[in-house]
Image 1 (cartoon, rainbow over the protein chains, first blue to last red):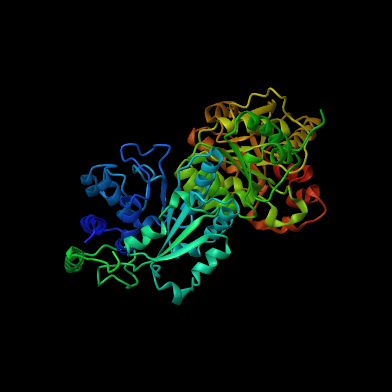
Image 2 (cartoon, rainbow over the protein chains, first blue to last red; image 1 turned 120 degrees about the vertical axis):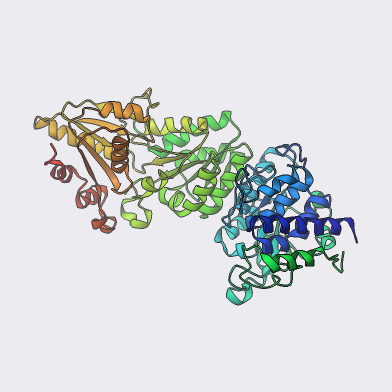
Length: 276
Length: 311
């Protein structure tokens, strides 16, 4: 198994433990983006310095789908933005770690939780970088349910028109919202065509394959395009845990009792993706 | 100097400031002004047209501010505020990001355009948020000064401008530090108002003076103002009449009642403004601002009729 796959599995387990201990947290949304965050933070994609969260030359990473905060908290703790023991404060007294994201968490960049916000802020940050002629990149992770927000498409128009090729959006395409599957409640497809028609470079990957995600982001600093890039990452909400995977209504919930035990056991098995 | 519109006064001053500070960026939601043309022409690197997409405009402004820019987001008042209110809440209030919203079209400014273009609730809504100040201009002198204030603000700021060109009320060196100015002293009480209604307040005061009642006039242009100073100015006042081209719930009259209550000051207050019983029917009275005001009871006779029992 690759070191990145090992790391990803370790992060998933740590995230799940954090949520089980706290009795809350969006576990299924976190599991769908575990490989995406692993690729970005451990796959030599993002530039960052945990000791200097405000380092001006850092790449910005905005978790627009901030319900997946437990996954990001876990990654940031593992990287040393703060002690891993801090995760015990998730949704507890004396900590900055809420169910949704707060700017005061080192590395968080923004307060977020309401959907359709982070993407536009990311575009503003990318625009500022263009104005200042700085070379860092701005990444943002969107939920697919978030794409129902009209603000997303307003920003998509703006970013393409202003040639923000320093902006990278990744869509965690897990096909589910809270109540139902996207395609049966309000169809989002064809997504690639939608983004392309808005003037974006588009690629689509298996969002649980770290190698595919890294492939899509290869050479990201020297992309021969004036346009922003969107990576549509097909994922499974609750991936790796059978009782959650593809089961609506697990949104926003942490497992308890026997279900918690079963979920942890499944994540403790060496999960190896076929393409990694 | 002939009076100019508030938006031209604001953008003229901001143009000068933007020439000196390259971090000043204007994000317009398909909204112009003659003075804005200079910014577009001379400072293209500091101007963005967000199109008719207020959500994106506000979010981009927030992103720019997080990177150290000083953004000014510009649209018709109610589109710049009510249309994007939840974004204002999260980005400007919760995250405390210093964006300046510049809204043109206070009250019935867009007279014949109907309710969609009237701003009759924005003060109530915008003053509900921590970390956000409202600056409401009654003349172009204040509008220009608000450009300077906005550049020095550490928090978000809503500059509420009148569309119509109004005569200047304030001297260029007016002290704006307290957020209000006493335009006229009055032993018999005060009329307190904002924006265009301060002009109306002066007309009402003139009318009453001819009848032997000397009412003072206070122009309230910052919310919240220096509250201690305002309470001090109002203490002992025989009566206070608030005038607003805005619905009464949550407006400046409502604010004054809260302020006096908080400070335990007892002053008889009469609020004159728009009632819910009026609905939006005033918005569909055509033929100009004065006709709307007459219909809404905000013309001089209408106001005198409403306050006759408190004087």
